Amino acid sequence: MTVCHWAWAQSPASQEASLRIGAGAETATVRIIESSPLLERTGRQLADFIALRTGMAVTLATGSPADDDRGIVFLLARESAPAVRAMTFQPTAALPRMDHFRDDGYAIRTLSRGEATYVICAGKADTGVKYAAHRLMRATRTRNRVVSLPPLHLEADPFFKGRYATPSSVMAGSAPELLQKHYAWENWDPSRIPALADYFDAAGMNGLFLFDSPCRYNWTGNHTSPEQMAIKIRTLARRARELNMSVCLWVHGASNLSTNRFSDLQPRDPEQLKQILEDFDRLAERYGDVIDAVYGHWVDPGGAPPPADITDPQKLQLAVVERLERKAGRKLLSIFSAHGLHWPIGPQGSLPWAGYKGAETLIESGILPKGTSIATPEMRIYPGEIEFARKVRAAG
Image 1 (tube, rainbow, N blue to C red):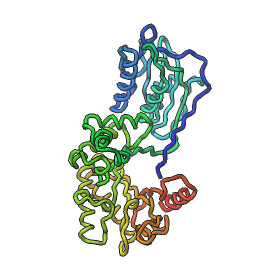
Image 2 (cartoon, helix red, strand yellow):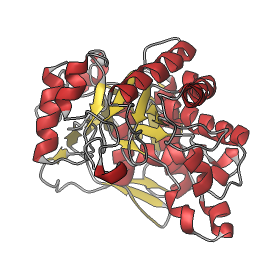
Image 3 (spheres, rainbow, N blue to C red):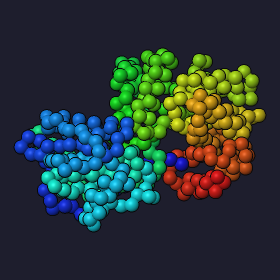
Image 4 (spheres, rainbow, N blue to C red):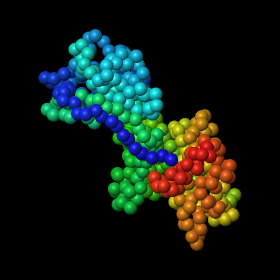
């Protein structure tokens, strides 16, 4: 079950004056203790953020704090770095031990040493450092080309592991054609698309759901060919993974793009099963190397009358995951969606997949292997959903 929540704790408001960067104020340096691709990107992002607002050049440096550091120094590092621990031993600046934090947990501390004021963005891992820098940027104020920043003393550890966004253009579906063409990101030039991942990353999301099924084309006015759609989805996925975000491919199970069948193919019909598996092969070829997880969606829309039953979507889940993992060359997180399996939306009020009776049905069938994630039936945090989740987790 994936839910979104973000919490942070801050000490009582400091009475110290805000730090000021700009003409007539302090200079700024961004220092990265141990460089990595993600921290280099974060450091440049922070430096550009300050330079754009002040008109001043911001120095980018690597290595431990130096005796000749001056002005405001933004120090980006993991909290376990010896130099960070040496600087924060005093009780007023002490960092929390992050052994039990998630990788995107972080702390920010402000302290003076020599002729420099250090703003330490310390993370459990590089991802945490990135989120600390984002939090710092949100705390700034700009006036007359001077950036001001309060002395920060705060920490955060996300309560929920997965914070996924779905950049969907469903709202464009009923819009006039001209709006569809320009509103939907799927119709943008590929050069613009990485900004979407940047936006969701800055908003605190750590994953994206992406999908390439017939509905996507209908919602966006059919202005983009399948070949161009693949380029754009892959562009977005690659940028997200550069930012240490997870990418999950949402598969509308019983579909086929080439025949424009959307979630209504029948797996017990040999010809229609062939179409389903051909679409799985298409998805694997296009996206297997740029994703980390697979979400199989079987209802709303979806379903098949008897003799098809609840075993069919479970078997199809294994089929699509096997194809995508073969292309990826590694294990992927498999998420089977129970969304709507209990709704009486089939013919004459029947279930979409016969035989479903709750979490026990998926557990006792033995088809889905242990380690499979199950998305809850209502996609809500209701008491019934919590009970469902407990049963699934108890079964492994």
